[in-house]
Image (tube, rainbow, N blue to C red; front, side, top):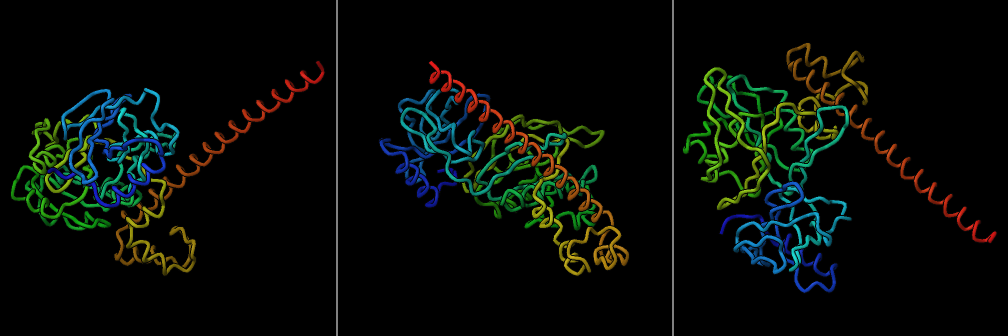
Length: 368
């Protein structure tokens, strides 16, 4: 049986959901494998985690172990849930009519920040154990992009791992220190079965593969799972692969599940400043020795971080990237707070208007 990630904790969550939904004959456990416009694909399991049969009323049937397509625009789903709509990786409870009755509590939740001014976050996937950051070393690896992905992984609650692809085209000495903040760092050729076998031995749980366009994510996913996703050829001029993944999809292997994602061309900062601090643990450790507890590492006297830069113990470019990430996170948080306040004001204004109209209506009745 392929790995889907169902365990005793999910079984317990499902039992609780079934009890909370009194009157439902049976609640099927299922995991969201793909999200489309107005529909999702769900892999159903029984109470043991084995592939389950299709609910009798499911809109689009499928044999055991194959995804069931469920339309989201029909009534009966749990649209009032705070977690709605479901994302790839979510565990859900599905009734015999093919309705999603509950989205089980998420253990981890990965979002992608907006690059624009709106300070919005785009859901990527849920219930992942490892964020596998794929970064090619030819052309030169981007430290800033790696750090941004690592911060997103920390913010999600998952563990960041770094895989440096196309390592056969680079000098191994140039690959050091690229994985600061990562739990694991591996340099490999994604087309090498021997190299990928080393990674397979380490992986478990659910893994989401992220990185820029042309980083070799689909090639790596194909090799990990023995799948047949379309793999772009590499342009000789710049060694970049052509983009091939157009949507997020969960694919099950024998011992782990993989979620492949489309590549990104620009990546905003997470609003979670603690996650950024976790990514730059060396700077956080130095900052503990600053004279001022709220030192901004600018021109304050007694700044241990600046002193480390002056002595060469800390790379000045790394500090600059840290400060830019923190500043971007604070701006996004301020915009998000302002948008929330405006939304609350609009809601309060609408409620006041309804109240005034109801008062006038009642006064009119009393006069009559």
